[in-house]
Image (tube, rainbow, N blue to C red; front, side, top):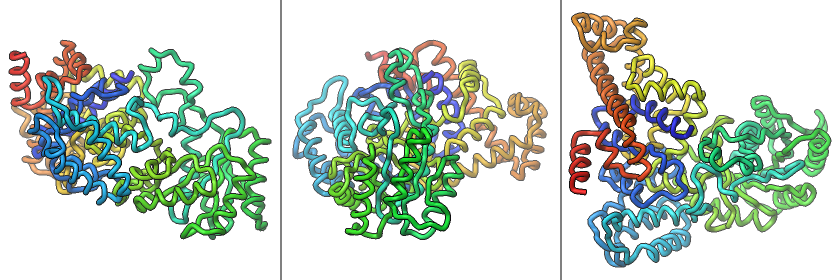
Length: 578
């Protein structure tokens, strides 16, 4: 099933790749090669699988912010360029790159001590590494940095990127699980309560069920298709200080279909009495989880802590989650320490990661406080909420993209039957305009064009604002032109690519969609390229070589079947010399 959806993802990304034409196709084509089984499912990628992150195209300056780690990723990627020519890493030749990485970390508002400790750990493991036939020093350096970043973010290099590490999971014991939410005012705590409730009701994996699954079945199952806990959730509105706080939570509960416990209309109870009543109601009502929204303040003060401590002592929650604004940078770690001194904080939720945050909060929280980041808010909607994966975040910081999340997003929007049909079309090399429209629609469901592009390894940092705007415009033009085609033309692209009537058909389509003949001709040219790539991939998969190459992380061997001419020639030459 995983490989099936990897094929679907490649199919979806083909029109995206050529929507950036002619400015980026070669680099996008090579990046598509990284959609490999070893990259997605392995617990510890091989050092050779990191080599693509060091290509010249992946170290270009990034012009538009695509994630909280964007600036940090760009700075670190630029530092890698100086390591490429080296045959051995020494303290002296490593110093310029380490200095640039340190500057990038500090500019991204990472705690200074955390930055220094990270670089010391990397230096201790990387210095003295000599070149071997299979591993270059720069590749080894990236691997070391990847492992150390994963540890710094609260994970382990041995973690499987497809599953949430145990430290990031919520308690799933028998009976009622009480989750106490805390944080400063303005961090998005009330909204985070609703998002967490929806996650527990719909998306949380049942780890007890997973542990009982056969290993083979587990290895073939996407994380989005794993058994879900489907908890019954009750929310308690215990913020009695902020005006309309309870009304806001009531609206959010209505939106997600969750139950809300609050004081009777017209009564003003204390946070402690509401919380106590809510826990009693949750136990009597047979709920699986109780989420308690508490009051926040502009600053950490005695009144806030006293109320929070009293509620915590009474409820004895299994989880106390601290909601942190990622825009506060390393101050988020300081806030975590302050709250941890009063109550037993078990983890953090980072909000507003889709904004202008620089990643300092995510990198600093666990290292400074020892409390893991468990979830991240990725937007304003109640669905914009994800579990935090340290390994994926480390890959994103290093500009390696996030193939796992890409596959998971696709699996949420495509049924198994549709995935089988799309994979069959890909294998047969069949690709028509109806497929193009379907894929464009899927991309829209998976998120913005920028959001999807940034998950492609080595691509997100290359896209400028003007390129993104142009790509979006080309997609819209293409959709409009397809809308002006007849059903027969959409199913039979050859009618527009060859024959006497091709020109007159293109004239009609251009006029009907408000475009020029050159626009229509250009789209046909791009579409022809997509069909050519489909044919190459079909031959590659039919011969069985791609699976073999992808499993070994040999991107040069894969380039023999896909990519530009120079890549194929280089792969063929290396194969002969080998």
